[in-house]
Image (cartoon, helix red, strand yellow):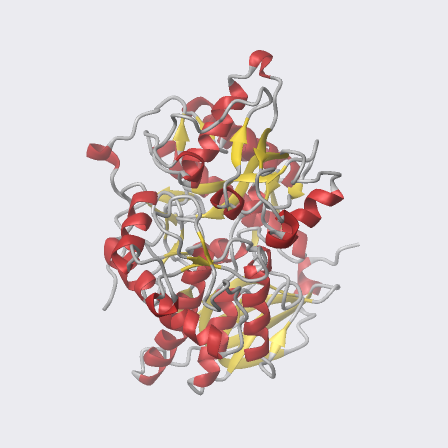
Length: 545
């Protein structure tokens, strides 16, 4: 029996103090924590699973970066990488942010290499490169064939050895002073969800994405939008939330729910092609890059092909990789997932379907990780820096986490040194009581009405159904925290997607199929109103130098 709220409040058993608490232990979080320690900050990492349990280890493709001294293709350049990122972003990238973050990629990768990261090499001993959707050159470096995220995570965990980490601690809410400055987080600890607080001069959110909004996703179970919800409740703004990227190719399993095995885009980069049940090329005539078109284009094309199948009975397409020799050696992670499903990619086409993959929007930050709430910083997928716009370019995410995690820590150190983060006093108030919808019903609504294809009537149905199906619930269990976050984030996504009356990037409106640059070449910002409802507000905050 769950204790009443008053008893839960009295169970607080510890109270930690730090200069900075980093919430999340993926690439952005560990990069931020390691850099904060290097800068002399008392640093604590809070993660709701084990240290390696975030989304980083599932990243297969690689890191998109131009390293001319390591044998990059002679026709590649920083300008070309920037141009590809802007093109994929559908007119909504911040060009200055793109150049700033992409331009910092070589230093970030070289730091990994100096720290012992083992990337794959070609026959000449130089870093091997592949090409993925939306890229005009072979610039994606990889590790373990298709296990780049796992190698990046391993390298960062080695660098973080000895750093204080609170595993199985879920961040519930931000602690704030009377002036609104963030000065720590309230947490639930361990299997008993024991309440506690972590006081800090600054909080860096690196909590990842929101893939669990949908029934099928490439994301792990932890990707429930907790950090985004925490930031919104603390008064921060978010932007570009309507742009949820669906990866075109996850392994299809009938009636699958939750995380589905990813079939990396690099498989198409090595020559695989998408075909329907009749063997017809899915991407023929759809885009100049064919099967290597940006992810939003490929996912939409697959969805359209499935919807137009005779009788509408097809629920997946196929990735024909039978022409790739030595598939298992080049893509061991994909091969293992296929083998578990009884598929031999060297002889059988791989059944695939799009699934929720990456949130292009998030908490609004400038290019050093500061949000518009004093004391609150964000990096990685939870943040909206302007790098991705309406659609993320493949393999830019690990790059962003490496660059922005480091910058967020440096921003905290700079703000502490300049006296911009006075030590605030805040006592935890009552346990928050917020609207919560049942997760299965929410996922069904979002998958049906706010997935790849959307329209006004469907999103209105989803919004109304959420309104009548929520119950006010105290956040004293991990399940309640996660489901509350999903409920809030779902409402924010629906608000932004309903308002954007066009099709752009990951946001595909069946009732508004054309892109409208005259009215909609701009980002939308979301905040919570005094009653806690997501509402569209004024333009993006100005970025400091």
